[in-house]
Length: 115
Image (cartoon, rainbow, N blue to C red; front, top):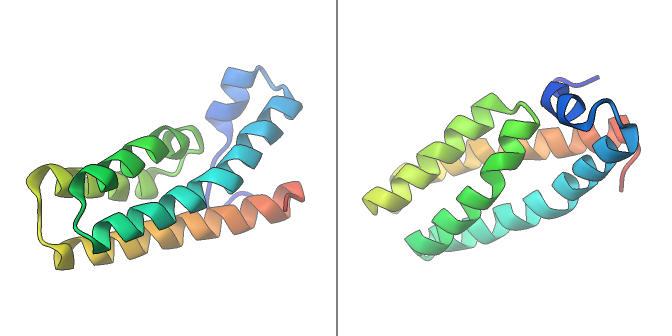
């Protein structure tokens, strides 16, 4: 039961093709957590350009899976990179983003029996 994500857009663009939906979810589960780890490293190194690249890369996935809060947090990360903000101010936002994504990944794995 989807509490941390919403597949309405995925089903809409797939025209209810369940194989396509599974592929989208597999890609999300495999790639986004890895990108998130790279983002964390880039934040810790105050590498604004690399942080932006990873935040920008995961943005469409968050929209597609209806993860509105995570999407807004990700926008905050992007804005931090543009403003070259202080590392302290972004850490809480990143932790919350990470938490939302981890919950969604766990739930998707369970709901769709993915590894």
